[in-house]
Image 1 (spheres, rainbow, N blue to C red):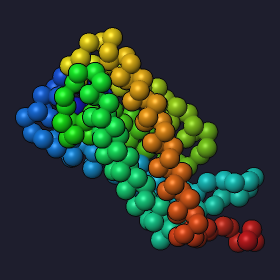
Image 2: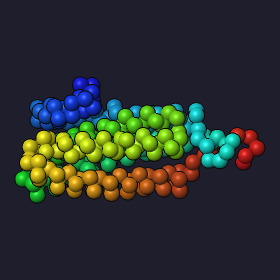
Image 3: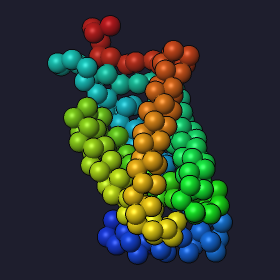
Length: 204
């Protein structure tokens, strides 16, 4: 897993060929990568929102109780798992149009490795800040898009011309899935689990 992680940021084309080979030799090879890296945003977010907090107004620092933060982070972890599996299913379904015949596990693996920049960006959760989050997530989106467009033809073993359209389709579906799952998760957490906020004394 470590070698793939490093190569995705240093030698992405070579990394995708290695990942495809490993997925063919060992189905579900992606699981360790997905499960471990998905812990980065969840654990970092828990630390950030319980220990550091964030500012909603000047001179105000808001934190979450440990129980509310744990609920949010568990939901985030489950959302990551569900989103990756769902994207894998969509990638496999769309592959038929481009004469590619990957297995479902290979498609889930591709989705998991493509999302690597987002997992690494989860380190920003240690210091919750709106502008830091926007900057880091923006950079992660750019690099994840690069990995998608350069890696999909190699991973699926299709022509680059077909890979461009295939990648664009995956990108559009991925954006829709990501927004839908995250918004649903936040609404469920906020309206059903009723988070407990910890504000400084005197601010209510």
